[in-house]
Length: 128
Image (cartoon, rainbow, N blue to C red; front, side, top):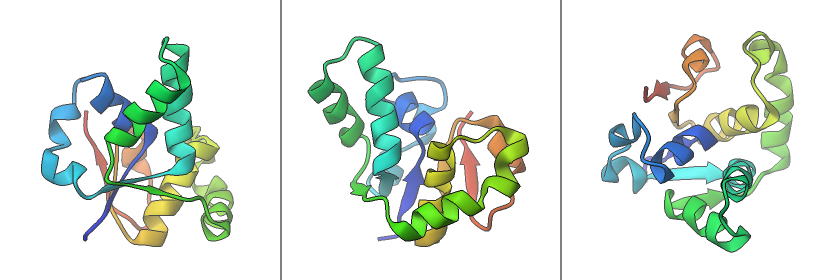
């Protein structure tokens, strides 16, 4: 499987049927994975929007074909990305998403416009 990585914003776009979600076709979703860090971020945002904890987790999981555990290797990469991403204001969750994509050598999908400027060695697709 040629995996792709979804960040939290892409997952939320799918769940909330936001502009750009239509670009995340079924074929792309069938190859999509997300970091456990990003799924926790999505779950938190959905809980704040009124979902129960279990309901929020189920919605988050339903958007991807696989959940990837956060590894020490990913943590090290996420930490090292601070110098390349600090001026764009990327969070630890954002850098963790990028770290997973770097480890998997997979493209990442996001709604975050600033990511267009990133040069981290993987393709970045901004869906809106």
